[in-house]
Amino acid sequence: MLHLDFSFLTSKLIHDYVLQGLIFSVVLTLIATVVGVAIGTLLALMRLSGRRWLDWPAAFYVNTMRAIPLVMILLWFFLLVPRITGLYIGAERSAVITFVAFEAALFAEIMRAGIQSVPAGQAHAGFALGMSYAQNMRLVVLPQAFRNMLPVLLTQVIALFQDTTLVYAIGAYDLLKGFENAGKVYGRITEAYLAVAVVYLAICFSLSYLVKRVHQKVAIIR
Amino acid sequence: MAMDWQVFCRDTLTSDLVSGCLGTSRDPTYLNWIIGAWGWTAAVSLSALLLALAVGSVIGVLRTLPNNPGWARFGNVWVELFRGIPLLVQIFLWYHVAPALFAPMKSLPSFVLVMLGLGFFTSARFAEQVRSGIQSLPRGQRQAGLALGLTQWQTYRYVLLPMAYRIVLPPLTSESMNLIKNSAVAFAVSIPELTQFAMQATEETSRPIEVYLAVTVLYIVTAGVVYLALHWVEQRTRVPGFAVGKREH
Image 1 (cartoon, rainbow over the protein chains, first blue to last red):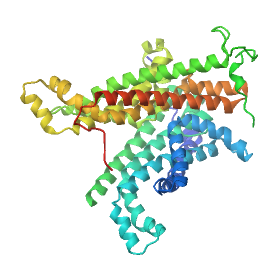
Image 2 (image 1 turned 90 degrees about the horizontal axis):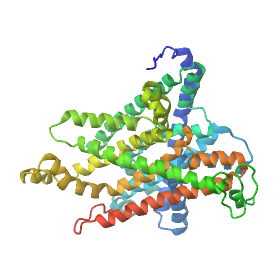
Image 3 (image 1 turned 90 degrees about the vertical axis):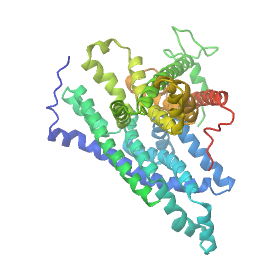
Image 4 (image 1 turned 120 degrees about the vertical axis):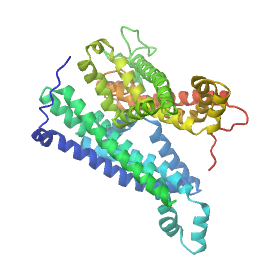
């Protein structure tokens, strides 16, 4: 039986190794959420436009992204982005681009379901009032779609936060890597993995508790 | 950029072209290697799928047992625990931490550890689906079963589960396809599966596009086969008159 010793987890170590990784994981999640939802909404509108030349490319993009393991998508972008742009961008920025592109596909499906959950009469009423397509979407349909889909969107954000650990494949420095490096330097790798598991569990558990609260609030209004 | 698919016909040691593309088991080509890697992906995915189905069903049922808050709480903790930790971290826990804490686990091959990690991770998701499937059945089904004199176990076996499984088959199908994609994380603990192959073969051959394309296609094919298989099961087990799984928009 191994003797566990967590005494190496000092605030200095957290500051030196973990903090940088935690910030990257959080920033990556936030950027992928905000930009991913924006692009995802556009993709959803393309899919629901009723025009083939908009619908088919969006469907192809979304289905391709969803059919391939995220690790492979990370490897693909890490390979292709420097080749296409001719710039070496590093693992961290490559990870941000990949997650935006990947999450956009997932958020597109959520937003499509959200838009379809808004009764058709709402859009008809908007048009009858003389609103343009853009006004109708911005002022009538999308606000309701967001509200209906809020719990699902937030659940996806938690899954996204967990998925950010996969940047391990291209060697980006995230929360997991921070703990792992610290564990290696201090020869306490077992404790480091246990600690990082507890940190992720605490963050994800609190977030999913929050989602439940939000779900209740949204449910009361409807 | 021109592609060179002959890369798969090259010997993995000498990188000479091998006629007929397939080498021997002692002297393999990259084609041999990728087929073996595909086998590892299939083996990891299938064994984890079976484990997840078994454990997920038990946990899902536990969470629906009436008048049994202890078991229900156990099920809830199980689901929160295995859903709250990222898969890659769970794989590391099984691979690095568990053998260090429990000496007997040191003798387990890494394949088994990855199967346990991926299987338990997915079991939490399956349990959630099974629970919601059972709870979506009308309460009268359970009451009718018990009123007929069936025991609790018989009620589940003959009344509740047959309908619940039919209801949750579509979401189980998509979770199973997720499981195949998730099996890619096994690269991190040196299982020689497809993603690991993609990384190593790229380094050796400097032909990343061809290697990645082949691996990507194999993943899509694998997920497609699982989809067709489960879709076939869905068709075969459909009860006429119960249009379960069909949702109207």
